Length: 453
Image (cartoon, rainbow, N blue to C red; front, side, top):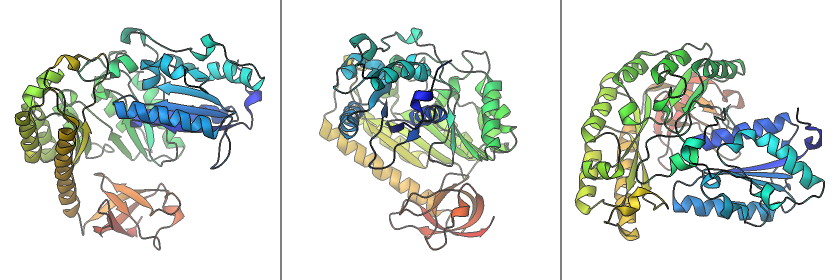
């Protein structure tokens, strides 16, 4: 039993970079600390504990992580500083050598965050400096040795909850370090996840986003299937909406598409990583599908859910992406009935197989190609939103940050804002019928008028 009395009333500051999974995990860390009596430091207050959850998907992400660590150390000079996440797993020694960092936790160790805090943080509060070994407690494990699954189901400052159903990846795409940072695919059982979803319903939560690294691979650990998880979650009373955060196209079965089209609570909203619209580049990436399969999945979704929002991840400027390959990618994306493109310039990651591919795209060309795809994305998103102006839709509203318009999302993920004079605090976490108006000032949402709840 861990004695948490020494932590009562202590203040913590959190900083998260990266994906929704990271934000979900940070929120869970925050809840664990709250249960120990730790409170979140307010703006301008000095924290006793700083926790930085890192990302390492690109070189830019690495740089932002280091910047965040240095900034928090300056702002909270007496705090116990913990660094975890993907960058911590991949570069533990580098991060442990940053002045002010007290503890670096890898993918296995972060599941035992409280245990490590009860030792290291307690010692620091007693004036005992961490030893080199304690400070550098980290994982340098091979992917097969990262086996711990750290559960996470939390909402942080949002209305929507994020339920982690899977971690790790077995795919080893040539450009990616995620299997080295997160380990191989693993998951809890369906019954435990249903229990967590039931807990969300008991707290009054209405929407859950299903998160993970490669969630369509769910079941590797337990011998279950992702479609079975989806069906079990759909039956949880009280949860009105589910969203699937990201699903590989080769794991997006026609059975799953059909179920979502007729389910009680799964929304017509999909996020599907394409990475490239060139078969040549897909082969170089070691992706497990081609353009034909991807196009089939988009067609199947739109055939059964014509109003579905479909987001697509695209990487530009990867090694091997000749001008001809990019032209194929652009033309393919233009031909698809998708809603939004999440565009990522390729970033070389140490130790990846992509470094052996000879053709290199320079930074200026990457920027040019990114701009072309971002413009295409804006065009598609604008057209999708415009189709819904004048219609009525059900919107789940979220509490607005100070000075910002209250907003929410329709079933098919259209962002809707309320004029400040029409927003009410009681709308937070409420599903309301809204008449969709014209675009807001920066074209990122439609203005709405509440008709009735």
